[in-house]
Length: 244
Image 1 (cartoon, rainbow, N blue to C red):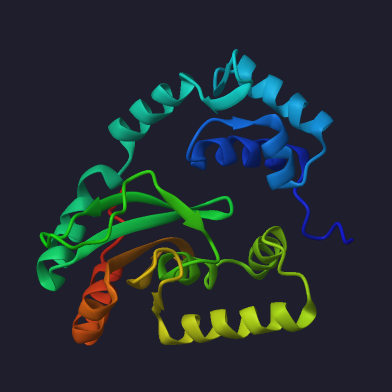
Image 2 (image 1 turned 180 degrees about the horizontal axis):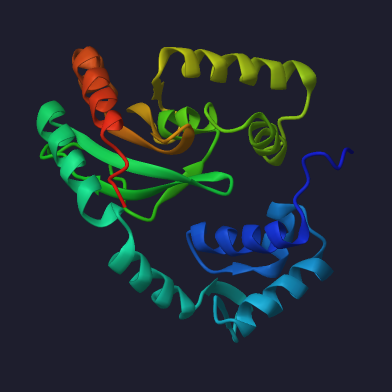
């Protein structure tokens, strides 16, 4: 097994933190070890450090871990000083009005794409996606359009993380990502939620990919208005991110 795509110790600890943050429920050290491929001894060492900094907390009865109170300090700082707080919502609101569908802004966090902001669709039948929700960087238009524009080393590390290691499989992924990069947007259906289609365009700060603006809706509604939705997300991506 090659060391080329392995994380260093600091990255592994951050991976543990983000794994706990993205879990649907409190998670045990054993599950964390199995899901990350880290030895249990190393896992407990990282958990102790994260607990000492109040970034996570342990349930004494079940020995499960969840995000700790230090997250409130991080959230407060983000809400006060992040340029995303106002400008992104204004752009997403315009996309939602243009398309009639849910609009979202996602950013890369580790090996996942995290929803930072979203404006709901007015339709009764709509995509259920929340701020703070995340998805693997290999599933869905939002994730793939981000992955396609990351540096090659990070792309390969991400594929390796998700068990995509065979040369033929890796080459197939690289070809798909190259096509997404060339056309400037991504479209997917049922890759993250069954029956839901996504249309996404990359957002850059200079030459660096920083996120994706996306429309998510039931497949039939996206098919009927595909060109209009593509135009709306491309237009929105050009004015994001807001100036800091």
